[in-house]
Image: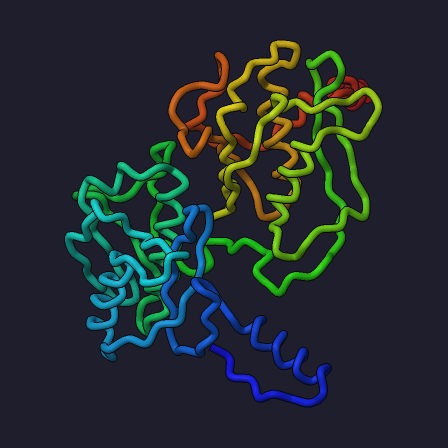
Length: 321
């Protein structure tokens, strides 16, 4: 907690209060300074939060053991969730130079895609605080960890993961955003640029974009591609991938809008942000099954501007020139 002396002058009190708030981090807004911190998942398991931590160990091996134990243990704070689930066990580890290799049992593979990436980010960013540990690799059983496409994840560092913006004191900011909606026919995307959009700094830009998409189009000849009544459950960005979870209403079929237009309305809007390269869409966190006939929810989708109205005409003009 921040200890504030009572001041007669309100202005000075407010200034000190804001300084304390800006220093607070993570679960329960604890602001006690610590040489180390533990990274947990928030209550909704949609992002990472930090909590100060004073370890008992001081040597490298002792810190690794202690941090792994804490990462696998429930926090006393109800706002925090342990990043390593209860059914996942760390079966061993080894430190070779600055590379720490962690081995997990097969239950690691049972995590959802969103939870797995957040777990990985929390573990890596917590353990790389330890002097002498600069990069980490994950093994599940005897095999190196692979992503949803079967590619080996490889060695990870602090820089492998991008933190969500919007964790500062609540203030109002403004920005311009580019959104993609459906045309009236439902067979093409319409680009809509919104200037001077005001938003709270406590809201991440990816959440702002999703909220604006769900609110609907402002341009003439454009409409929302996302089924009416759909609500945002969670949205988070880790390692350049944006994970969007929508509620069950997303499955409501509006066949007046092509399925590709629905998917790329979301994907193209989010990938306008430089921190996002791919997007995965889920329904209540479930990435199983298909969206209509052609789009697997397990896939991560990249930017595709071929569906934007007028894109083909521009390509043909460039070819002729």
